[in-house]
Image (cartoon, rainbow, N blue to C red; front, side, top):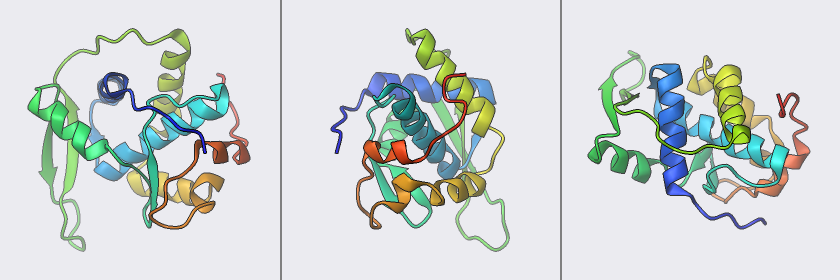
Length: 165
């Protein structure tokens, strides 16, 4: 299993970048899946993760371990704001909406910026459920048991098209 080191500043900057380009992100599930695709697509293309986050297999798909901790920190720092809204009569939990409150000031490489733009373009309009459904069909998620960390190495069994666009 490849050992990655979390780059918290890049993580925060990537989230701000996605928020600024999407306007807002509706739902924690969607935000978590966007990070999964960012890290695993980047790893498949360049053999290193984008943020270094650890992803764990849960019934709703891969979940980044530090997402809640980091986004709560970002909110305390005034980098993002969140609000909750009940979106369904059948679900008790309200949906969390994330919005950026500041400009991104991070020196992304051209390669990193292109991958961020690709993730936004390819996955940004999808719902959390749609993104979760995609992850459930992928080798990294299916290669481990529930509640186990997902190795970045499993990404090479996905054969993702258009990674270097």
